[in-house]
Image 1 (cartoon, rainbow over the protein chains, first blue to last red):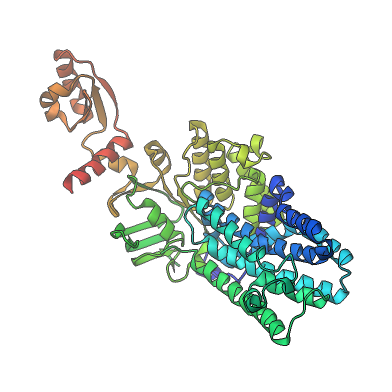
Image 2 (cartoon, rainbow over the protein chains, first blue to last red):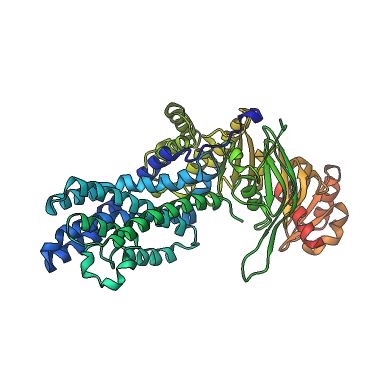
Length: 253
Length: 308
């Protein structure tokens, strides 16, 4: 070996391989997979019972909530690997780049859990009669919400030293952001003065944009700009920060 | 090109935690590991072994001092070092929801090996670690020792130029430990370098070309296991049950250590007959054995503690 063989690694080196590793891990967790849509299913039943006319909106919301909730899985998984298994050291003291570790883990979880979400998405298309443009919009905002929540999940995972604390906080955080605001129900049912707040929350901003595209919600120009801008800017910043943070936290200080 | 796999100069690390006094884990460790060597880092709990390994393996920043791996500064260019190292972390566990075969294979793939190479090395490592019978069971169903073997298999399969093993054989049965030793010897014969920590002194004795003993963040002693054993003042130990009250009579033969009522005397072979005669005349029984690395370690570290 010579010094010439020492080369800087390219960003995201090892991403696909670690994605496959994480997907394989998740595929062995049948119970988690089987229960992955439980909360969404219960909320859909509630909506169906209380107001069947809103089931289309709720199905769209279920898609968005599902990809948002993947961030919670990233949080739990990253923390579990680091705290309980110390396997992050195994991977990060090697050629796999930290950003590939973060994004590979997130994408591995996405690959495994996306199946049921797609089924709900198809139901949403059929029940709410979504136009192709709306379907594309739904796919786009869902992907954005996934990237945003995965970034949040990974960054948060580095803040804890005990998994027990994470279980409580992660559930609280993801339910407050994913269930409370108008994700499963139309934006119009939420108090108007609070619209700017929910339009800055990624899941409800995404839901509002899709709802408005098939007539389930009315957005003013400024509200639309707030939702789009907030979603794009927040996701870009959070993703960039997660990549930076992944690199930074490889090495303790 | 550096002839050393690893070199540290006056490496220091102080942990600073809010609301707690700073803890100095390394107080100026200078060390070198030559290519192809197996070097053991020994010390009590909290002596600084894991801190050193974490800094050397790019996972922790030092407070001051320098450390290089194959001539590359670990602190300034960790990205250039990482492709050439592999680590068994202390208390590390494989993914519980992967089988050992999947664990090793996917890890090698994540390190950039081709499918064919990863597959071949996976099978070889599983065989070396005696894991073929469990290779397709999820790790969650394996015993602690089998999981540890999976971790070691994962890392030795990399055949990385420099391996850091933090207590690699912890929890393993004696047969498994010997399988690990054989694998590690094979790796260094093929050109890898190994720096390991262990609390099993027989392991350090059997495996290491050289060893460093650290205590309170400082290197106390370095040399071969034989050097260390010789340094205690004899190559034989005589164990005398009930001999403690007679310590004064035996003190002239060499250093004496008590363990309860048992007296252990470290002695040179030429004075063994004389000592045994005295034991018999005193109505005591005595057994003779070679000085082990553990006794040497206890004496070296114990002396340091007493000096402090």
